[in-house]
Image (cartoon, rainbow, N blue to C red):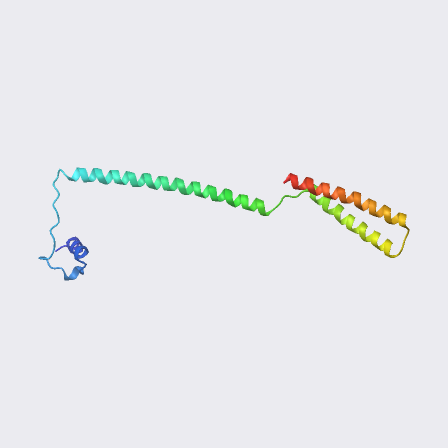
Length: 142
């Protein structure tokens, strides 16, 4: 008994191939010569269909890779903000306002003239408006 017959019987009956005797082996169906070209044609068409499916899957995989790349690029852009000169200007002016307010507070504590105190507070208020304007413009640029 050849190996293919043993394997066929083994698969049908779940019996190890070594324990199958020739009398237990099921006969394999004989193919007529007229059926063979039809089987070859069927196999070729199924191979073509399988190749077409593989091509489609390859295209889908490429497309998904492109989409993933675009999503990764978008995520990187969201994480890192570009440099903004207006944001830098607004931040520096805001720090200057805080310094002026601290200076005005020290003048008030040490009872320096009221005129100097009001000038510093007015200058701080104007600079605060400049800082807010710069920061608002920087937000709109994004």
